Length: 143
Image (cartoon, rainbow, N blue to C red; front, side):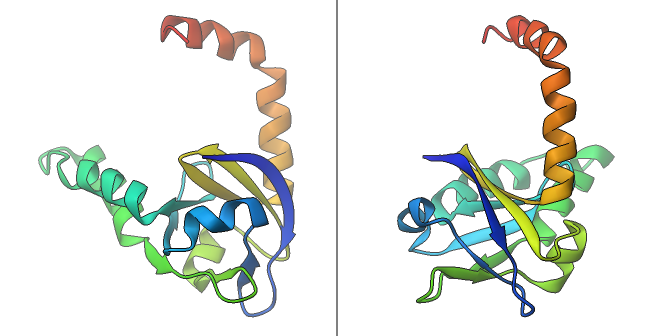
């Protein structure tokens, strides 16, 4: 399970140190892909297989399903953690996430998200201001 929020840096080569508490779950390798809200998602190989199977089963006749599958699947890249606990994030994913030096790594149960820190702070502040509305909608989902 991934939980927590961590400040990290990406080096000039595009390497990101994974938080120590996440490394064991990702030691067998991981998949990084385009996420939602301009962040990146990292999944364990097992979680990625579950998601990829669902995406592959989406109806080809629906443009929105094709678009979402393309976003997630075509953007995916296998990554391994090196001896220093880092992964290499490909250029096209760093561009997608507007990742430069300062990033926030957030654990969200079955995935890790990588955010441009400035974008994360804006998103978090916006979400915190909307908690009343959000909780009302979650009540409809029985949460």
